[in-house]
Length: 336
Image (cartoon, rainbow, N blue to C red; front, side):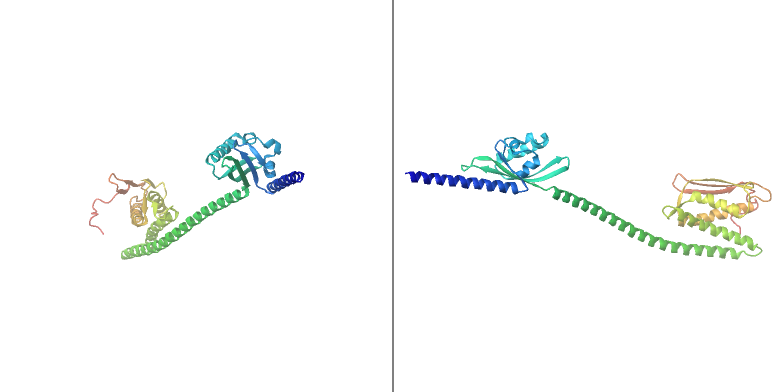
């Protein structure tokens, strides 16, 4: 009988010793893990925590066990944790959540797995949670996202630059063809003007012939000068062109401003080169003619030029002078 009692006591001691060793190993294992591990009961009170969790909270085990999160975390965060854990206890299912903790050193992110704990009869006793610090991963992901966004913006910028370059190249090709076309046309016009002038070279002062030719070519060159200074290289402000051309003609004939004044009233009107050159030649001929013949001797007066838009959308150009006018015995419709 005594031997039986001794054997039973020995078995019980061995069982307790084995249980103590298991608990010691479990405690050693939990404390060696860098992840935050804790167990809570159904009232969300801490039952067990490892060293990593205690270091994170900054409290001893006696200050943690038996308390809830409301004692350690801000109200907003603790309320968020409470809602998630109540759902876990109600659904009795493992959940994976992410929590962000804000500290003086910055935000800390945890990936958290919470698993229900059941008794042998299936009654839920609480849950165990394992939290892993993923701050470095989150920061890396955020940095990679920012890099990707920057790369995306850079790709968009380069695509836009490429489109702009291609568009610019195409525009320059068109512009180059247009320049060749305009140069050819202008040279043909100059050739025609010189031919028309050569027909009437009899008893004409060569100096005057050259001066007239120069003014005509200058009127054409001025169009291209205005185009060069224009924003879109396609149109010029013809009102400003008239002011400059008329002043150049007066100057080329060496006439003082006291003898002939310019009265120019021109709207700021945009014209393309195909319209500007013939209109410029017309202005040149009429203004030159007025300078040469309208104010003989010491006569003085004004050359008047107006350019405006009519009610029907047309442009009206009027050139006149206050000089002697056309002789009454001259038929302008039957004249050489």
